[in-house]
Image (cartoon, rainbow, N blue to C red):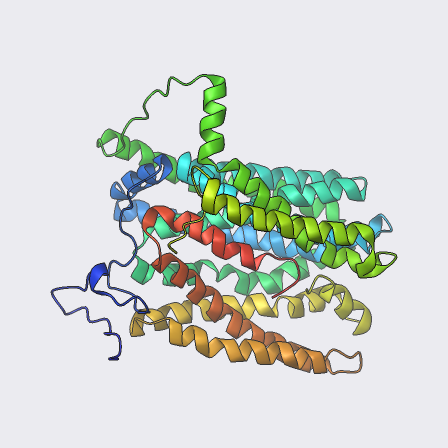
Length: 461
């Protein structure tokens, strides 16, 4: 079989989708999967109309606002994450940090599915505003919490909102760019973490030593909405421009009753499928952290019951989506939670230095992201790059098994983190591009949610 054709921008006749081989891993110059599907939802129609109204000036301003929002969001995430262990410790329940983190991260990760539906049906801006509100509510609750139960609930609100904001921003960028240039912007948008992996732990230590964790959460509960407002404002402004130009079709009056509206949105949001998936994943993943502290460990009754029920619900979700769902969500065509505590206790590191090592992965992966994006643009291929990163990731994980002992020099742990970071950053970029290249534009939000669910922050990289 001959090798897939390389990208050649000098060619006057681009390859069409029908001419591609099924197993081809080449990014076309301006097209690939961003073709229209038969069924396009209202939110997708609206954002496509808005993108037609972009001017170069508005596009640049919006890009700057998005970058600032991503910078502030990553900074507050670095600070709040490094202070999380001290919240549960203040209630004399440090061991529950793992449970609260898993619960909130799982729910925050699987929430990308309903968020995808929200932004496809109602609109990107509406989804972004909703996620900002949820993240702010979580920060306010964490600042005011008086027990671990309130903190756990706050974590759920926070991670749903935080993950949702980042997810909607990724969809914004996908709407604003062609597939060929998309990963460059994705990589650039991740660069705030390069600075914040150093700034975040240092600021967290300052809050801990000179104030308390509540002020850290409270400050960003005020700052975050202020920073997010310009992003939403620019999209609302361009929404008005598109409407004036006649590019935005008016929303017809539905004429549905309250009950009919509930049925309509339950059907469009695939409510039954969403609930099966969310509860199934929660029941399947949460016991992994609870089993160690249970009386009989894996033989404990409620651990077995949760695992069995979780598996049943996941199987039920697949069967329901395949055979019963009137509107399927999934397009069928297409453990370091105690790492910070370990570094501080075993290696006697400060909050700042432990945070630096903890965030080596974030730093390296965000640094390598733009470089991988440029490499993909230059070569037009992403599969060989992704495959090259797999053995590096495996090596980094395997070395940690040998270097896990307390007497190990900390430099070896950092080395493993660096290897994992470079491999992980490459895989994140290429897997997102592979997912988006396989579906039409109106399914990008859904496929990004599907891809993101397997990168839930529950302690496994």
